Length: 64
Image (cartoon, rainbow, N blue to C red; front, side, top):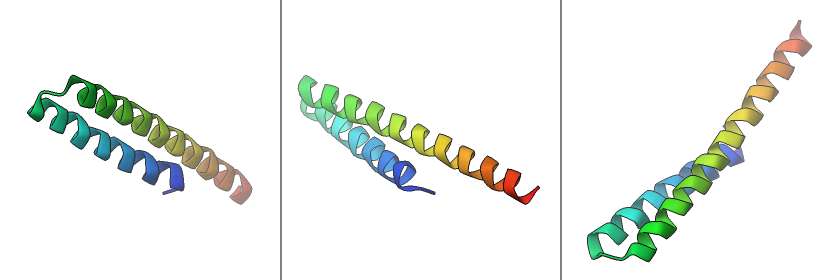
């Protein structure tokens, strides 16, 4: 795992909590902020996943 995967997962989880809390208290702005944080987190995690895939492919090519 790399930093982007970890940070992305944390942002996604925090966004989910914020969104659910906004739903519970009836705060549309908190729901939107939480959903936005989730999207940012998922995007950052996807970036980290892509970085890992490139790193793994490069490592396999070096070993061949």
